[in-house]
Each structure stands twice: as structure tokens, then as C-alpha cells.
Length: 336
Image (cartoon, rainbow, N blue to C red; front, side, top):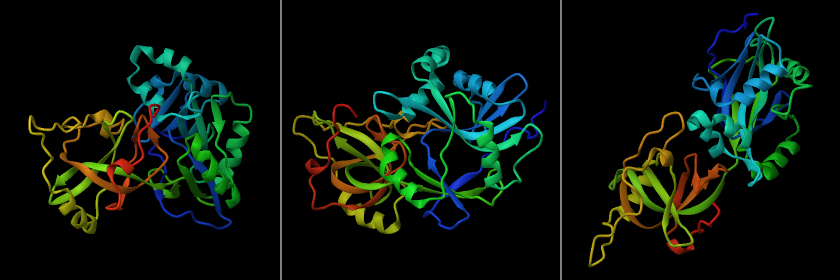
């Protein structure tokens, strides 16, 4: 049986915005994983990333589970997650390990099994469902996955803003990044930004220890925190600075790094920053930067994706904290 949608499919995506309200909006958790479209073929399952790259060979337990859960011709949209039992939350780092696991992928799958969280049904084996409204696609998806194995789960959906508040207040500790809002009366539009996403964010402090751009006109800042041994550890990079922020920061950062009398002080971070520090899993690239004297504290806006001592998504610079010493900044503990 042929799948009634030709691959690849560029998934429908969300734009960052305030959560809309109204009786035509439904809300779902925003999962911290790999977006994946699943094609149930006659004799196999193909998984495709948001950038239309093949993922199936990295997640053999998921392709087996989807093959058992749904008939040929079904096309699902969803998110791949790996649960970290030690931290009691989803782990993007464990998910990334699959990409470089090589011949060890089956061992990783046994030790840290993945789950596929389905949130849309794009085809049902008879025809494309892209033109149907979300409420009808959701109804069919619920019926389809009613007896699915544990590896394939249906994402929660609600129209109740009190439930959304509970997700934001309590579920972020388990790894969700926020909430996605979708119109119940809208079709699925591949490649278009038809949904709204709201990330859970909070403010905190970090130490500026590098920039991209020029000291007289920094483009982004690189921030760190001291660990329990007093070492300055890289924790993240900012989004592009505004013109006003560049003007404010330039005189604070345009000073040479202090030198000891005996020998020059070595900046604690490598040059360039390794791709595993600063790049995404799909397009990892080393990052060249300008080291700065690490004595300026920045207030930053961050989300919940903090793992292995770094914020995976870019932080947002709010303002310099001239009233704070670097020793007032939260310290990285031994288990982060």
C-alpha cells in the first residue's frame, strides 16, 4: 500500500509568541526532543527529521514500535524523547548520543530507550489528511493510538488554560520547554509557521567572558559560571545584541585581560569553542570568539534546556549587573 503523501514532508512549525486565547485554540506541551515525521511503509518505518534527514537507523526500537502500532500508509508527526531515570526528566544529551552511537546504537536503545510522542496524523492509509481541521485529525489519532505500545504515546492536549498553567508551573521540571498553541479549525500546512509557541523562561546571572564581533561592537556574548573548584565554565551564548546593548556593553568589555607578572593569564576556554559546546546537532561548527576580562556580570533570560552545565538554546541578554560581583553569581554544582 502506497503512502498517500510523498516524502519528504517539511513539518508545520511554530513561531514564538504570547499564547493566544479563544475557543478555537488547543494547547499541547512543547517537548524537548527531536522533531520526527514517521512514515509507516508496507514493510518498514522511515523517520524523518525537521530538516528532512533520515533518523530511523538511530532509533530501531521506535521503528519497531510504530510498525507494530499502526497499519501501512499512516504518517505521523511527533517528537522523539529519551527519559533519564537518574534525573527524572527527558534528556536531550542522551538523545544526541544516538546520532554518534554507530555500532553501539542497539546497546544505547536497551539502556536508554526512546519514546515517540505523537501529536498529529497526516495520513491514514487511504488519503492525505492535511486538509482536515486539527480537531478531526486529533480524533482519528486518538482512535489510532488507543492500543499503541508504551514506546508510542499520544501527547496531551487541552483547551483549558488552568491545565496549561499547571503544565508551565510543574511539568518544566520533567523537561518540557513550554506550550504550543494550535487552531482546532486549521488544516496542516507543511513548512508554514501556523502554530504559536511559548517557552518557559526565567532570569538569572552569568559572567561575560567572551564575545563575537568586535570589542567596540559586540554581536553576541559568551557567558560562564564558576564551578565549586573556582574554574570558569562556559554555560552559553546569547542571541544577537541590540544596538543599545552593544553601546552599553562596549566600554565595559573593551579592556585587556589582566596579566600576572610571571606569565600571561590564559583564558580558560579553548579557541575556537568546540562544536559540541556551541553548535547544534545538525550543523555543528566551532566558534571563534574574542576573550574578555571575566569580571562583568550579566542578567540573562534563560529557558529550561540546561544540561551538562550549559544552556542548549541561546540565552537573552537583559542588562549588565554593575551591582554584582562575579562571586555573587550562582555556582555550578558538582552534579550539573
